[in-house]
Length: 155
Image (cartoon, rainbow, N blue to C red; front, side, top):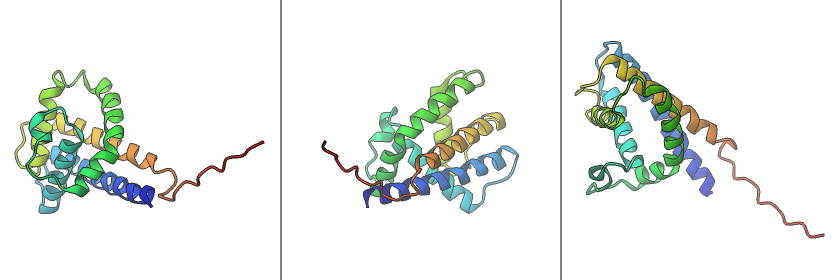
């Protein structure tokens, strides 16, 4: 049952991240965010801030939603795996990754309203979210069905 619940959390996160990636691409193209877009970007920003504890102010929030904390824990290994692969390619276009992430997370938390990111940077962020979403889905290889426990064989 635990694996089924964890798979559900991972699937929900992957789906929302995919939608957020699409939203970022549209915003980069000049489209204004709708209320649904703002909601999903805010959710994505909150999740990423719970996953990425490198900034003290993000880890020390007064209230932490337990479901969000569970999702963050479930997706954290995939986040860093995806991030390091993405960063190898993006570092030519993002000279200071710390500043970029701060601006990106702030943009997400604002619901896509307050942006100090260029269209190119939004496209890079969309590529990261897309890759993160796809990598999460690839982790659900058993479709949420619990894996059978191996039966010890004694000879």
